[in-house]
Amino acid sequence: MHILTIAIFLVSLIFNSYSADKALKPEQYPFSFSKPLGKIDKNSAQRGLQVYVEVCASCHGLKHVAYRSLEGLGYNKDQINRIAAQFQLNDLPNDEGEILKRNAIFSDYFVEPYENYNAAKAANNGAYPPDLSLMVKARKDGANYVRSLLLGYTDAPEGFDVGEGYYNKYMAGNVIAMPQPLYGDDVEYKDGTKASLEQEVNDLVTFLTWTSMPDLENRRAAGLKVIFFLFIMTIVFYLSYRKIWSELKN
Image 1 (cartoon, rainbow, N blue to C red):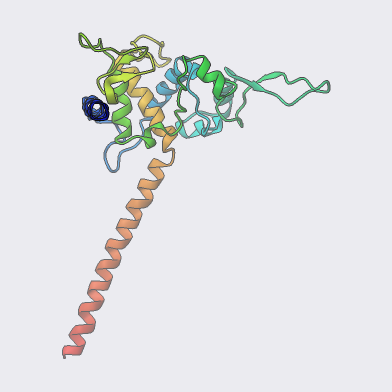
Image 2: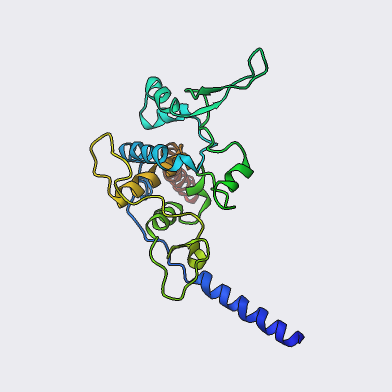
């Protein structure tokens, strides 16, 4: 009996390992920020913000991002206040002790879609929608992984049981709890760009890359300055070395 139990356990372990390995590797996409000196495409990130606000914000939060940070994408204070005003949060208690709602403003952080963790799980069949603030940084090959995942929904192969989830060829085990969020034409872009599925996904991933690494361009610029400084100092030290040893030899 014990041998049979062990055998079943080993078979299930092998099967689970096999299932997890079936996930395809993320497709590599040439984002504007992919190259060593690449930059965030601000226009794409702004469109991605629109996708987030109109589609993703109903389930996923950005709790580590303040609305004022959107200045980094080219918005001014009035524009940011209009974006923030689309969301409401709890105000301070009034004289009667009541906690009323107010519109979010420039200085607030992005409003969470649910009051608490349990409310989020209850609204999503027990699955907690992860915060997206640092999603790109938190995943290996983050931008390409998130992009592939959002484009990876397809019908499950015959005989494949997804249970209460959905088939995704880039997800470990090929089953994901989140239903497909984007289909194309989910938003009407303010700049007139055609909102195809791939365009929406690329823009959203660009925006989430910015939320994960808002200082990306500054860090790369600083790194370039350091490399240039080290290069110059290497030349200076080498020339000093040659001069000192030439004098000693003479």
